Every structure is written in C-alpha cells, then in structure tokens.
Image (cartoon, rainbow, N blue to C red):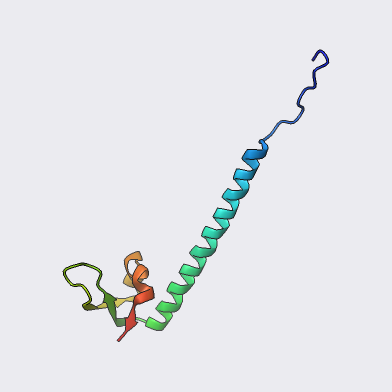
Length: 92
C-alpha cells in the first residue's frame, strides 16, 4: 500500500484462460465427432431395417481373415461392439 502498485485484477490468470479455451475446443470437437458417429449409426440402421445378416470381419488370430456371419437385429446393432465394426460391415 505504501506506494507499491497493487494488482487490482481478480480472476483466472491468462494461462488458465488459455487452458479453458482449449478445453472448450476439445469439448466442441468431441461433440461433433459424437454427432457424426451417431448419424452414421442411424444411417446404417436405416439401411439395415430390422433383421439382416451381417458379415463381421474377424480380428482374432485363430480365425484370421475368415468372415463370420451373424444375424443381428436393430436393437443389438446399436450396441457399441457392432457400431465399432459398422464401418467395415457388409450386408449379405
């Protein structure tokens, strides 16, 4: 107080603000990806309709390269296991 300049600013530091900005951007990106994934899944389900045969490419060593055909319904298909494989799934 005796002649020294006091910092009157209270609030997040510049560094914190930058970090928050990055966090916001990450959230937006994640949101966008989530939306596009959901849309892709929906489009895929539309093409599936109810019950179809699905070829899942096997990625275990024992059945390397072989394709396994399973019958799944739309409800099952929304489970993440099938959605992860949705990109490489072919309809029969």
